[in-house]
Structure formats: C-alpha cells, structure tokens
Image (cartoon, rainbow, N blue to C red):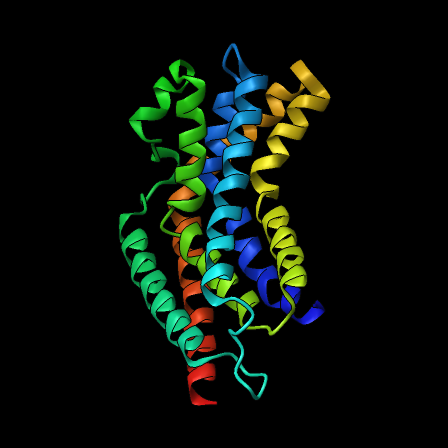
Length: 225
C-alpha cells in the first residue's frame, strides 16, 4: 500500500495548492454565518474529491493492474490524455497571467459570496473540487493509480482516504485557523487571501505544467512497458 500512497502524494499536493478555493473559504469565513458556511464548504470539498476518486476505483476495480503487476494499458492512455489536457490548460493560464500581480482581480461573483445560501456554498465546494479544471484531472489520475496498484479493495479505499485528506489541507487550513483563533485569525487569513488572489493565475499555470508533464511521463512509461 505504501507504493500506492507514494504514487498519489504529489497529485494530492497539487490539489491542496489551489489558490482560488482557499480565497473562497476565507471569504466565506468572513460572512455572518462563517462557521457554518465554512464547515459546509469543507464538507463539499471533501465529498467532491472522495466521490470522484471512488468513481474511478469503481471503474477500475481491483483489475486495474495487468497480470505482470504493471498498470493496465487504459491507465497509461488515461494519464497521457490527462497530462496533455493539463499542459494545454497551463499554456492558456500562462497567457492570461497579469503582468503586474498587484493588478490581479478575483472573479466578480466572489463579491456576492456573503449572500450565498448553504446549498450554494455546498455546490460551490463541489464545483471547486470535482469540477475544477486542475483538481478533477488530478483526482481522476490518482484514482486510476490506486486502481492500477493491484491492492485489495479495502486498501484501495484507505489509500483514497489518505489522498483526500492531503488534497484537502489547503482548504482546511484557513478553517482550522478560524476555529482555533477566532477573531485573531482575521489578519492572518487576510494576508493569505491577498497573496492567493494576486498569484492565483501564475500558480495555477505552474501547477498545470508540472503535473501535466508528470502525467505525460507516467502515461508514456506505462504504454511503453
């Protein structure tokens, strides 16, 4: 199981570093119902990643590995396609980056986040985790890696849980700071929000490229075996 966990740690870290969702939960925590809405957002985030990962485990089952203990051909093809997709998105993000980071602007809908209902907060979290152009491919790739490990179903589920926990650290960190420090957390969260907002596009472009190239390499390696 250790090998399977090692395979998905990097992918989980790539999801954890998600500037826009971090900004979103910080803004949510600043609303009148910050505690409730923050918990709902965290719940939606975890559910989105877990559901997408579980879907991949169900698709691959325990037969994702070949008889020679190597990942099946479909796993290599999937990683190759996802890698190419991420590289393309990375190039697009890089072209969109502001020349001056201080001029970066958040999406306009974020200014109305204090008026979101609990259902909208939950839906927003699901969109950021399972429907995000970076996080969804990385989660799918992680699910494929776990499925192709040849582990028993129980160990696959445990590996997926570890992946989801690590992938959620970036979003959970502001929530933990808020719950532990209360009002004293405002200045810390504000500085995190400002940094994430200014560097969102550049960080995303770099992550798209890095993980896109990693998945391309993994896919080529599997298909060449």
